[in-house]
Amino acid sequence: MNETVISVKELTKRFGAFTAVDSISFEVGRGEIFGFLGANGAGKTTAMRMLCGLSYPTSGSGTVAGFDIMREGEQIKRHIGYMSQRFSLYNDLTVWENICLFAGIYRLTKRETQERATELLKTLDFASERDTLVGALPLGWKQKLSFAIATIHHPEVVFLDEPTGGVDPITRRQFWELIYKTAESGTTIFVTTHYMDEAEYCSRVSIMVDGKVCALDTPARLKQQFSADSMDEVFRTLARGAKRGE
Amino acid sequence: MNAIEIHNLSKSYGKVHALKDVSFEVKQGELFGLIGPDGAGKSTLFRLLTTLIAPDSGSASLNGLDIVKDYRSIRSCVGYMPGRFSLYPDLTVEENLQFFAALFGVTVEESYELVAPIYRQIEPFRKRRAGKLSGGMKQKLALSCALIHRPKVLLLDEPTTGVDAVSRSEFWEMLAGLKKHGITILVSTPYMDEASRCDRIALCNEGQILGIDTPNGIVQGFDSPLYGIKARNMFALLETARNADGVTDCYPFGEWHHIVTDGSFNPDMFIREFERIDGLEITPVEPTIEDMFIKLMKR
Image (cartoon, rainbow over all chains, first blue to last red; front, side):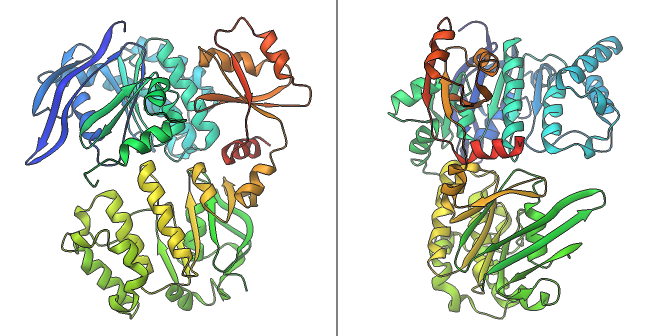
């Protein structure tokens, strides 16, 4: 693997007596599309929150974009992009205003903002929607815009939490083409999904069960390892073994 | 008599046409699926059928009862599970169930054998507050509550959204069990792979129905030869295939890309033309519901 962008070792998070994330270790390289799968309640969200600098681990160590996850949460937040499953732009602002707001939060200069916003509208073919209120856009468009804004500051890594939930099959695929393009330009993609066909689009996939990473490899090798025809089968085999109810 | 009849139903919210002139019927005892993404009008249809909102035009009936005129009697014969968790978070599991039983003037005991296969799975947590349950357990409690008055028609709005693949499977098995009691079930889902669990399905998008049939009937309507292709660089392959002769569409489909072709396409020619592409493979594939959905959306 070339340059490492995410590296965690024995990362653990406890809430009282409950171990939500139980000593997970892995590395993600630059430009990889890393699929982070797991059953509901397996600990994905808790793990992701630690990687995003939103919560500190109980024990273990690691770095994201070169910053220490035990101490440098604030720096991490500045160097990553994040898009949640729930739509996180402002419905009462226009497309352009949303772009400028987030560019400001990420401290882009006026010139950078102007350049990237223009480029973004062009890539998404959104120029005609520049002054449209975001609330009036169809869901698929909102999700694409949300993704583009999450990467406006050219982060080292972007975290996508179920970005395609409820999106129609055509837009879902356009969304994945955006992901591919972004990954090719060197941004690392860290993505969760419940669509198992999307797991096949990832460079590597990890599957969490009961707080632990119990499988991690390319989709092809995972299918081989579990003698399965699809990632869906691999997932079912592993998730059925879960002890902890979500 | 059909369990559900819908004739030219329309509903708008201001400028948004949520449901546009929709008609179909669901037979007694049928497990009928509404398959479509957000914005397809699924929830609006559920709210109309449960008499929570009134249509702009058109009509519908459940068990012969009109959704406008007979709204009171409809409410006692349908079970409804809305898309959002709508039980009382401050009541315990058992209190929620008792509360819904009381609302409908029945007792938990009377219906116990109907809800037992589902309720038993959460019964060990009956003293826990509903707000403290996990997603999967909430879903089971909501289904138990929707069933407590032995409804003739069960309306489930996206019960499996955001739920992992294994729990989703379990949920569909519960529905198959309920079907044996003769309950008519109308269920919506954005997951195309769940369509095969239904007797019949309606594919819907942007307030309209794109097609209605059995899951088999739907895929048989896919009349273009379909192939799966793969290569070492899947992303580059997309562009190449889209520009190839005889290819009308190409999109990612899990491990493969699917290419929709016309009569002029020849797979051997395709391989020969692109033999420079590393690891290129092609194989005929059976269309799925999702292939048909994509085709209908583009029509």
